[in-house]
Amino acid sequence: MAEIIDGKAEAAKVREETAAAVEAFRGEFGYAPGLATVLVGDDAASATYVRNKRRSCAKAGIESLHHELPGDVSQQEIVSLVEQLNERSDAHGILVQLPLPKGIDSRAVLNAISPDKDVDGLHPVSQGRLMAGEDGLRPCTPLGVMRLLDSIGTELKGARAVVVGRSLLVGKPVALLLLERHATVTLCHSRTEDLPGEVGRADIVVAAVGLPEFVQGEWIRDGSVVIDVGINRLEDGRLVGDVDFESCSQRASHITPVPGGVGPMTVAMLLSNTVTAARRLATR
Ligand code: NAP
Picture 1 (spheres, helix red, strand yellow):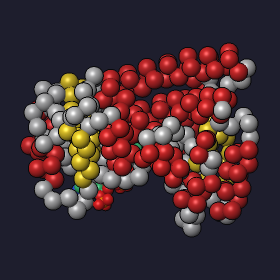
Picture 2 (cartoon, helix red, strand yellow):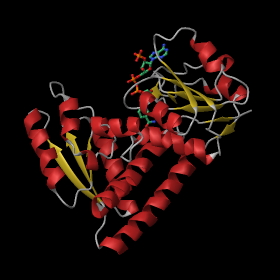
Picture 3 (cartoon, rainbow, N blue to C red):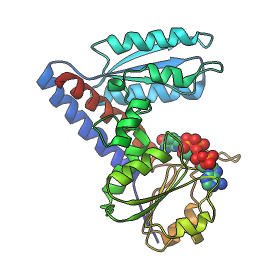
Picture 4 (cartoon, rainbow, N blue to C red):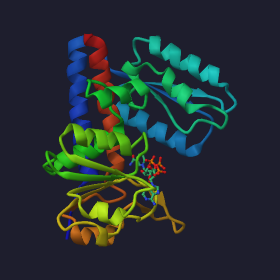
């Protein structure tokens, strides 16, 4: 039976470390790191996510600068706000909550964020820096995945890792972060032939597919580490991941639960990225 990787506990550690880093930063520079959040429209889920992020900032001692725009705002107005935030010396990170209302090109808005303040790590420059192995801000969920692997002392060097899903948000950056740490990485997707065979060769499986309980226990190797990035709400209201937890936990050595695995790590890494961005801006 697999050991559960406790994402809540690890996220709490990251938050504590971040709060200490904020204190040290304040002592050194005389001001706190600041995160600007931009919420467009009245999507209830987005409003909740932003509220949680702001609350988490406050707990860690990070200043939160919040901006709300109506749902019928033009793309140019959002971009103008982002450009103002790029110039503000008290905003070290900028987060535009997705999804944006229909008709707005999210890419154009995200691309307007200064890469130095891109705490979500989704700007093409941030992605290019990751690809090139250069210093830069990395996307939060992939960082959370890496931190969870490290929390249980997973040997990454030479390990065979299979990432299922190739999105810009999760799959591709996770694959690059694993590669940077010298894992041998296979990136699978909807056109992969013999997915069970690929997964079966892995020491580490990261599932970011968006299909409830998709990865089956019979696919995975005994003793592998399984990280489930998925968040799916079933019709009966249950929240499940992209991994069939029951069957996979029979074979894995370690596994993340949903909820309580990768999910809590994302906001924790956002806070940590904000301090990283502030320090880089303060010392360049
Ligand atoms: P996405 O953009 O929809 O990407 C899904 C990926 O899965 C695509 O690359 C797709 O392949 C692949 N895929 C779909 N069906 C497949 C199949 N039958 N076999 C193999 N691969 C298949 O999703 P995402 O944004 O990466 O998110 C993935 C999951 O993570 C979702 O459940 C999401 O809710 C969750 N998530 C969680 C967090 C968190 O904080 N915990 C953050 C972000 C996302 P193609 O490219 O070929 O279409």
